[in-house]
Amino acid sequence: MDNQVQSFAVANLRRRPVVVETGGFVAGFNPDTDSPYLNYATPLPGIEPTGRDVAALIGAFRERGLLPRLEFAPQAAPRVAPALRAAGFDTEAVHEYLLCTPRTLTIPPSADSPLVETPTTDEEYSELDAALAEAFGNVFAPSPQGAERLRRTQQTGGAVRFVRTPQEGCLGGASCSPPAEDTAELAGVGTRPGYRGRGIASAVTAALAGAMFAQGAGSVWLEYSGDGSRRVYERVGFRPQGTRLYLSLPAEQHP
Image (cartoon, rainbow, N blue to C red; front, side, top):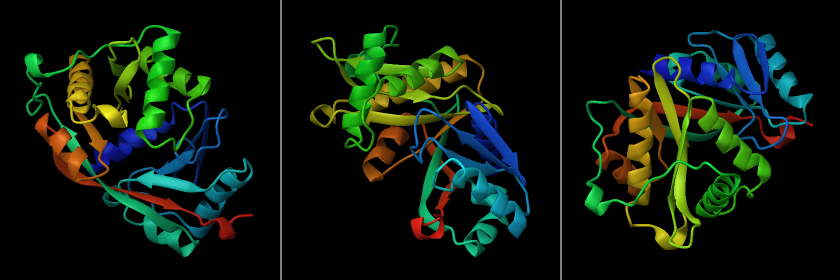
């Protein structure tokens, strides 16, 4: 599965507005933001990069004033992490990823689950963007660009879902990328702090996975941030599958 997830990561980055391929690496850039979480690179499965390959990749980030950063499944390209660390890259995080298939998906009983909807209006996409910003501690600010990225995901073959408040706002939601390599990545599952523990995350996660399976995807995968969220995902059919590695070049290493 590591090779499939890594091949997906490559295909997904190639969808970015700006793509640079060099030395077996694919870098995807979003010109409307300098966020390192939306501007990063990943290796082709199985590559054995040289120091020159890594230097060229660093240069692609430096010329844009961005932090050199990668996300990948290390078992799919075992020679990559040592080459990056030799160039000064440090580990940001190692995340386990979970996988769901049509066979393991468990839909929460409708009587116990909130109504999950697909946003259609500008206001709904903006409300969801704001709810997700709050859910993740305002690490990123809500913005027209964030709302547009959600809309673009829905319109290009992915899926976006949310749960509405009684006052027509948004309690929480998430999105799933368009499928590639017979799998899709579900990301950004978030619920406003005051509404957690009400089944919103599990309902949205199950709905998104189901939407991808209806499109023919063979699996959906995601990363989790703690034991609490892991239990939420396991309840709807996600199971441990592998790890993903995050590496970046420390600030003092790139002017």
